[in-house]
Amino acid sequence: MNTYHHHSVEGVIFDLDGTLVSSDLDFTLIRAQIGCPEEVDLLSYIATLPSPYMREEAMNIVHQHELMDAQHAYLLPGVAKAITQLKELAIPMAIVTRNYDRAVAIKLKNNPLPIQTVLTRSDAPPKPDPSALNAIATLWSIDQKNLLYVGDYLYDIQAAHNANMRACLYTPDEMPLYANQADYILRHFSELPKLINQLSEDQQELLVSHSSVQ
Image 1 (spheres, rainbow, N blue to C red):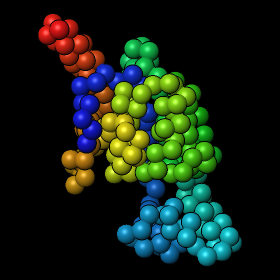
Image 2: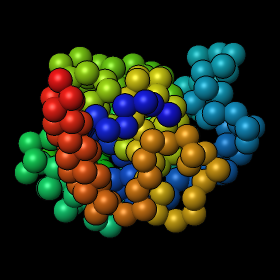
Image 3: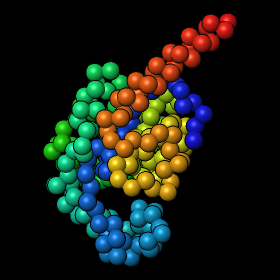
């Protein structure tokens, strides 16, 4: 976890699948079709396949599943309202996803959100690599400690911390074992604007406290 829990949040980056929109990808089936062991990351496994042909065939299988999933995706509860509230607060927002760019385009076309900056695995190495998150921090000229990454999986937490950002885990159902690695936990999206407002108030209180001491 990071040590700057009371710093205000000046920008929010979101994961896409399972965070902003639904995803029903059957990873067990995909792994079986390409021969990927359960304990190995799917994209990492494909990258290690011994020939370009094998890698292309495996990625084609993944793409087919992602495109089918994209057709039926819907906004998750509370997302639209929370995003609107953050926009009203003039909080810059972006999306960083491990998904396929064509599938992402379909999901966002069918579920429009006022978020212009979207990076997929076509744009940067997939999470937990922090490259995409760092690129957005540079684009916005905002210190990483003032950025929040919101996602629903361990890779999201790891990517945030690898980029020296705070990690907010969205977990509306069961609490996963890795939840204690996150800096904050959301059970419902309505909690996100409240969290950001509270952190802003905490920052102001710290500033007032320090100025009074001086």
